[in-house]
Image (cartoon, rainbow over the protein chains, first blue to last red):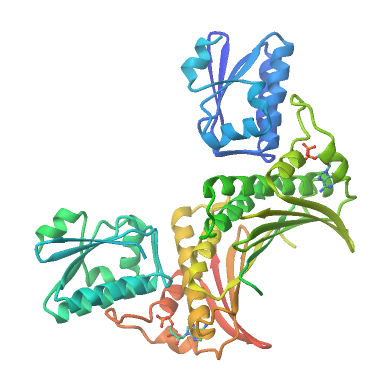
Length: 111
Length: 111
Length: 140
Length: 140
Ligand SMILES: Nc1ncnc2c1ncn2[C@@H]1O[C@H](COP(=O)(O)OP(=O)(O)O)[C@@H](O)[C@H]1O
Ligand SMILES: Nc1ncnc2c1ncn2[C@@H]1O[C@H](COP(=O)(O)OP(=O)(O)O)[C@@H](O)[C@H]1O
């Protein structure tokens, strides 16, 4: 999975640079987040602007990151969801679990 | 086939409003042009800006119109070809038969 | 054959092929000229259902063995869209899964639930030496 | 099976299905991760070759009879892309056509020429009670 990391203070912005987040590539994101947690970085924003399609594995990777961040008193927030991706969070009720922001600035300011 | 006709003086601008011009819909264009010839309208510009894909039937319909227009001392010119469509004219050497213009204004001014 | 499109796809048992199968499913939806509903949404849903069902066949039934193959059949008419995914694994109890609801914060276990939510009829049956997950969506 | 994608499509014998088959062909091309060339161009060419070959099977071999079916097989690996189009018509002499060049201003007769230009290997053979147009493109 193509991922771009940008650090701003103690917040890491992870931009997923793939059209599809599925069982083929979501494991990569999960592992990358585990590395960050090991380094003590546990405030993450996942920027999904490039993602047109997400399946249950993609959602699962985000839930994994969210739970690990919370367990470390950090947070994992989402931004820039395309409408179809947004509707997957609603279908699975995960929009009640995650803080979802329209753009990166809003997400940054919320920390 | 979705077609939009606009008349400017004695020139008829035919805008093909389809992504694909193929054996399924090219016959419609050919017939529409024959009607115009019957009405004495034989200066045509075919605007292909919406067309992403053209097959040999689509090219054939344009050749038919071109020959009928020429036989009536009119002309049939093309404008606004997408790159992939343009390359089909080169593959079949039809770029040497048709006058092809970058935009509608250029095509209009050439009459 | 009646007025149906039938697309029978076999790919190596690897998740990297999920994308192409999903896209083929979307192409089939875009060819349903008579469909009155939201075609984009239906295309996404079919892509998703194909992805979920295939990922299960690849990883759960075929144990992610890259030397196996996996097969899916997409069939569509103006009335319905049917997907069959074949596997030769040990099978599983889909009825039990359809009743048990995963908790929202579980990491996995959403695939079959999504399939049940998006499709109108779902069956998992044993046929000779293989299992078939058959999923139908009615189009009006 | 070796590492091949195989897509076996059957549709009613009607030109309105040319679009979906072309799009499926494009999806297959976009899944060829290792291809070094211009993927967009290859996708267009495959779409075009499928459209030309199918239109001939539908209209010339099957006389545009909407109650018949038409079948095409797309098969791809990292090495090659192969299309087989099946018909049950009277057949035709493709060798003769490959030699005879249509004049530029002819209205028809460009389909087979386009296929020969874009594909590396083209065969039309009789198999039992059907004809097969087999077209291969090498990918490196
Ligand atoms: N084709 C299959 N063969 C065997 N077991 C399967 C198959 N599909 C699903 N399962 C079982 O059902 C469970 C739930 O599947 P699913 O809802 O897709 O969630 P997940 O794949 O995330 O576990 C899987 O963990 C697996 O045990
Ligand atoms: N599958 C087929 N069965 C029978 N005849 C065919 C078939 N494909 C092509 N032909 C013959 O070859 C000719 C040339 O085909 P083509 O180059 O595609 O041009 P066009 O379809 O415009 O005539 C057709 O007119 C037809 O007579």
